[in-house]
Image (cartoon, helix red, strand yellow):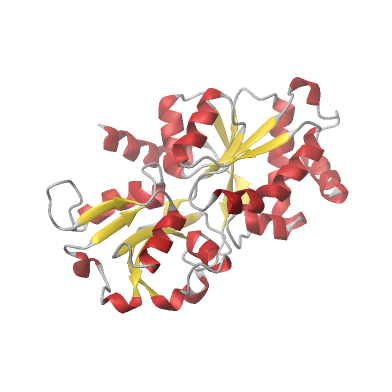
Length: 300
């Protein structure tokens, strides 16, 4: 880890040491979507590296839902998080000055898009949304981009109404997160559901990265028992954000640590970034203006 920290310090272009006295601790929020212990385990290496770099206690927080992380960022109790695009939009619409996007995950193909993926059990006879008439369709968290916002726009636009009383789907259910949706469909609790993936690699592996890959890695599902029934248009990957009020040197150090991780510690990056990734690259607010507008319109 010492070599990693030295490399990060070199890439940060800072000649002065970290002024850790300006902060007494640093808190990293982890979005929901899988059980809390797995989230904590996958990010423990990041916590340890950040603690060594900053010289202050670093804690991980894994709230039960997305809103717990969003409210932590807004309230100043969480300093950094990897948000989905919709979660960033909600944070920005609540307080435009609360957080700053710094980095985005780059997929193996060089892009930073991903997809909302609709799926069902392979033995259910469901192969597309036409087969979901009268069935239970599961979504994750209301603040999830791929788990709700984008499918709630694109699926009705394709001719499958989701509003109450439309009577196309038998029921619209919120599972609480991506893992809950995946396991719920796999176990037959829901007829179909949506989750996220980079769309690269093999279906049998759960693609290269995303919630399906996490579920495969955790031994929760056999992808051969699931089938894809829908896919969204590309969605911009959500940003890693820092709380705007943090000292500038802390922002630079944490940005550098995250940017260096895929090259310097691939194993840690695999856990933190939900699977395979080419790396991380800088991102700004303008990349999410379309999602912010979509979120604004949905709330009206």
